[in-house]
Length: 285
Image (cartoon, rainbow, N blue to C red; front, side, top):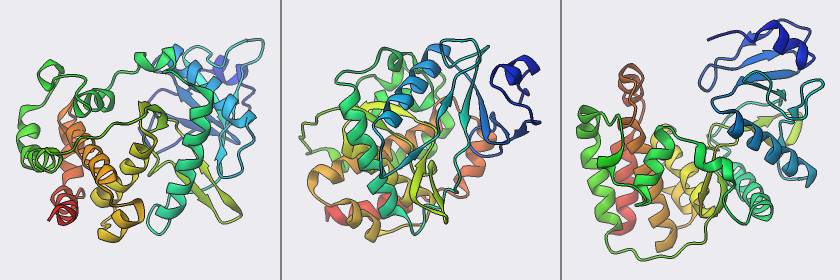
């Protein structure tokens, strides 16, 4: 992890020593009230910053956002492959707050839908294990065309993927797609001094709004030992259960793409993949 260079700190007006942030991918730094993030793709980083600025301009009341900071004497938000954001108070505490996460999810996605009627140009530039798994899950790309699929891990998760495919085999639904935040579970922050939850790290996809909710539920089942009640909170119509199947399929498939084996082996000790499948199968009996 590389520390932001001194000229980057100066450009963003940072005068305190940056400290690494352990959460997420472990690439970001905090310096006082500023969070510094490296850019994987400057066009994407610029697009997300401008989108966030537009969301803040809507003056939302059901969620808070970290504000992007422009570097001095610069028109854009990216400077030498870094962006800066205001620090957002709060902690990610999904258990006990899933209803609040879903409420914030719906509010954010309503606002996102007003800002973009078509996929923004920068969205097509985002390529990683999550976007590749997304394309496969939504039948936009064959798994055989995906690079860096780990055969051993794919073998480990094959039974779960097959079970989900069976549950979806008779489904025939049409969806309206829009811009969504597709990774909210650990990115909604709760602060005891502020009743409005904060949302960080916009992770964007062009998918149905209800699918963003389904991902939250899938994460609850896999990572947070949640059961039937969480699915009922989300909704149990055939349409919603189908989206939940897709969300679980996507989340599980990501383990096998561009795999970091050390992380996967550790994650498998905590991820209740079969338990999530069992909960969902009960709704199809």
